[in-house]
Length: 516
Image (cartoon, rainbow, N blue to C red; front, side, top):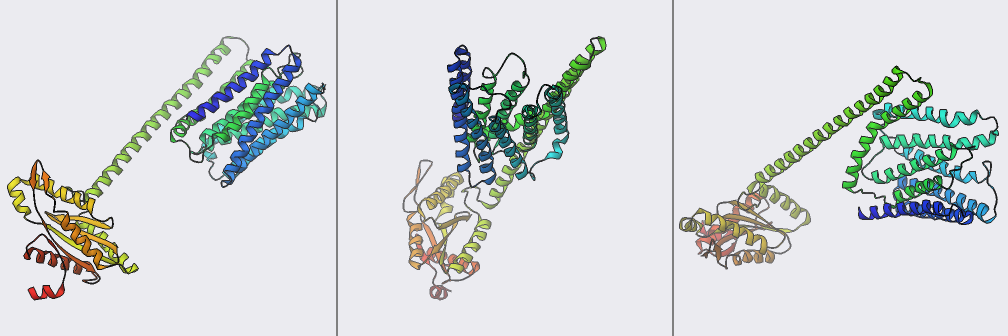
């Protein structure tokens, strides 16, 4: 966010300096013209650079690449027009009128912008939810067309002193901006994603600056007072810089905080935009047709109040919807967390948090299947803590439970990473050693299990010395099924107890048969 603020601040300062330059050197024509043109050209070049860099950066995203390329092309036409304007007016001292060929570049800028909007709309036509916002679009479009015809197009059609070509060139401003307005409307109301909200907003802001500049250029046409260079040029500069900044700040993966904030603002603006345009249309009708009397005064008060009331209802409904969505999201998250906790409890030992016998059985089956596919060995160990009942009777069950936890912790710390540890209940543990190649690896792991009990356990300040009896079986030497491996490891563990405890005994069929 800090880099975004810095860019916005720098662009704002740049436009403000341009405006101050025009005010400061108003009485010096050469400095006024050259300085103003330098600001415009520098802004256009910076915008073009950012746009083409983004087009190249996101070449693996065709829609993004082509969008920024078309917008960059519009900035290039803007730069060409400004360079030719500066050379002819400031250096050559020529006068440029409406019919001049330089208008081709400025018209091409608008055409490139419209082409960019059209391209985005076509490529995302399957994502556009036009039906949801159809009435909003129709309201805004109807007001825009009516106002454009009434205040922009009709006045020039009625001026017979304008040549037909000159009229056509002048009309390209309002007509082109109406196309921009429609494109902005479709994208603004329908196409918003979490990846491009911020850039989309900047493009829309830039187009609004372009629309305002063109409007101020066309409206006073024929008047003695010329606004060009005092207010219009900074607007055009702000337009081209905003479009360039959209490319500079674009990210394929948007900032969740920024996009979430923009989502809420976009939705709010979408709700109130049709009513704002409707209010503008009402003001225009009132200015042209209403006579000053009590009824018209009441209408002038009632209609705005009615529109404001409707906007307030929409905002309140939106807030209620957001609160409901937040509660649903919160409840869903709580339910998912509860389900995950229940699933964890169902498959893990409550005391040690190790996999219980149910989860171990499933993982054991998977590891045996993997060992069979890759022709690897696997070893299973039964671990029984010696004299654990005496420890419980002497020190109490709380100490016994803590000792079981400490045994599990030592196993997790000292056994190889390719082991699976499970508590089967009481003082019994099962360890699976998987992905091994030789029986020597299995014997080493059995000895490591014995070493775990060589150090005394310190529980609640009490030093407890104990050992373990451990039996082991190896897949596939001692069995190829889970049942056989478990049975043979269990038999070996009991032989370790009979032989004096505190030892690891691998399964041996001959010894077991001799004992039986």
